[in-house]
Structures are given as structure tokens and as C-alpha cells.
Length: 230
Image 1 (spheres, rainbow, N blue to C red):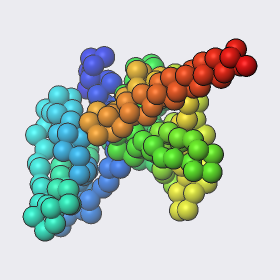
Image 2 (cartoon, helix red, strand yellow; image 1 turned 180 degrees about the horizontal axis):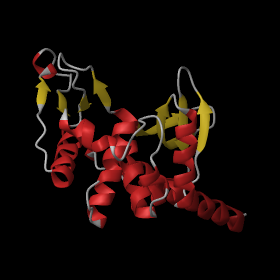
Image 3 (tube, helix red, strand yellow; image 1 turned 180 degrees about the vertical axis):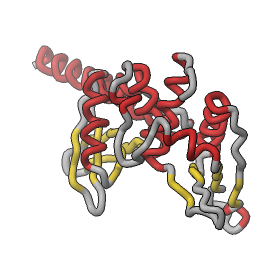
């Protein structure tokens, strides 16, 4: 294993989280070599992965782009990076893709934060919707995965950072959800997204609480004024 700085350790934890979340192994080629691959329609995510791999392992990974936007302007281009050498190097830290490695499990909060950032960048998102029956706004941070044991481990790391989460059984996969102003703020401050559109959506969800609170305060003030007028 390599001698890693504290900064490298957090980057490696991010890489592991991203790979467990959405990375994959390419089939062995005719020489029996397996590739580790990352792909996404979020360009900055793939380039961050490339930068981390270069920083830690001094590897320049390739980049391929599927120009889907040429077929349909509403489609997003898809970016992919992969490496055969990375398979051997990363397996020293991640022997089993379906299990969080001891490097993360026994690591500091900074390492777990890096892991969670990579995992949610790859697998998570933010939803803001209206519940018409209650005339309320639903804001939640979520991720989906078929590995229930993995999600419970993610839940425990979130709890260490004072972030409450709930796991629900969905169709074909389990869903881990984070609701509540305090929890979303803690996620933003302690973990965060590096994918711009996801970070912006998280900020929008947090700010919507301030709008609701201001509206609620105005309603209370109006009610108080009406009662005094009566």
C-alpha cells in the first residue's frame, strides 16, 4: 500500500465511495485483464475521479464521451473513464465492492465524510416536491441501493455526523432518505456534493425552509393583529 497524506486519504475514501455507489468492473479482455470504470452524465464528477486517481496513484486514465446531445438536444452527453492498472491498485484498499473496507470503517470522521461524499455523488440526489393533500413541501436527500447492509452502514456514518436518516423498502432497491432542516444543513456542511447540480438542489431545499418559516411568522403576526383588533 502507498504512504498517503491526510488529504490523499480523504480522496481515496471519496474514490471508494464513488466506486461502491456506481462504479463497475468491465469484462476481462482477451488477456484476462479487468478494468475499473466510472461513468456519468455529470462531467465534473468524472473529471474529479480522474484527478483523484492521478493524485493518489499517478495514473492518467482515459476518457471517452458519448455525444448523446447530437442525437437529441435534450439528452446529456455521457462521460466514462477506466483503467486496468487501477483495478490492481484499488483492490489493495477495496477487496470487496459490496462491503465498506476497513480503511473507511475504522477511519476518522474526515475519511467517512469523504466516503459519503463519493457515495452520494454517485448514487444520491435531492428531491423537492409538493404534497398536495397536506399543502406542504417535501424536501429530502436520498440514495438507492439494493445492498441493505451497505445502506445501514451509510446510515451509521451519517448518524456520527448528527444526520438522521431512514431506510425504506422500494421496488427492486432500498431507499435511504434524509429529511429535516438540521439534517440537510449538516450534510451540506460536513459532507456535501461535488456535482454542481446536486449541490445547487440541496441549497435550494435548505433555503425553502427559510421561506416557509418567514411565511409562518407572517401568518402568526397577522393572526395576532386580528385578535387584538377584535
